[in-house]
Image 1 (cartoon, rainbow, N blue to C red):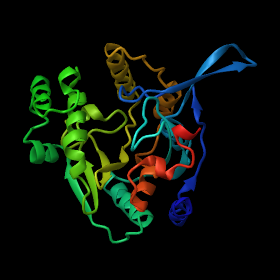
Image 2: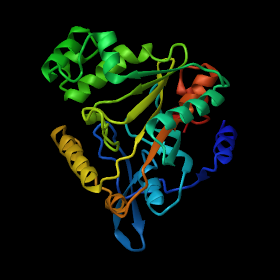
Image 3: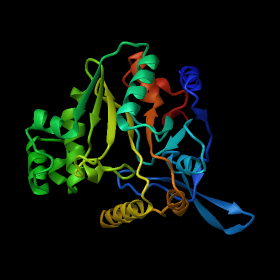
Image 4: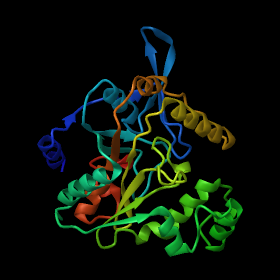
Length: 306
């Protein structure tokens, strides 16, 4: 699989890069919790907090700002608290960035690559908007319904634990998406879910045709999310505002706020090219290719074996 990935990008002139797994900053998204460590050594006798990356995105954008051109990376990523049938706290991802691409072009490239990795070059591809899915499967207008009505609807579905949950709007949307819609996606091929709500677009541009939505997609196959991609936000001021808003949400949730990556904001200030980027979960792609249902079956050393 890794050989196929590298051949795919070599033929397209996309350069492979490597960036650090450790960083002084971490994503501010409330849905992601970090694995943290501390360096003690020369120059840092008092210690320096470091985070294992959840994505190489911030470093790769700094490379884009320095004129790297199209780039890709195969690496490990880490998330605290995530372990289960589709999750391991350490996992493998493929991330790549395409200057000059629009989100529609990137989805075509993602579909071509995933089709090759699944050994299904002629696999069917479907495109569904986030709002259309909620309308079809749940009869809800995601841009009109009030948060309290979302909560009431979720609790009426007898979802495990919903009665005791206190979530914000996106929390209820994510619960409904994961519990009632995801399993229906990509049953007969690849399914791209597009136009996510703007509130779920930490690093993505908003759509010009509808500012309620973002130029963001997720890819599903047989009910499993494989990829997340979008047109990259390049405005440093707007990005800084989003980081602060997310840290405010973390504080209100009782979570630790994350240090903001000022180097990334500096790269955006310097200027990155208009581009799209995507992260693809390689462990899940391998699960899909082999027809297995537990990530433990495709990892040499999962959490229980280290």
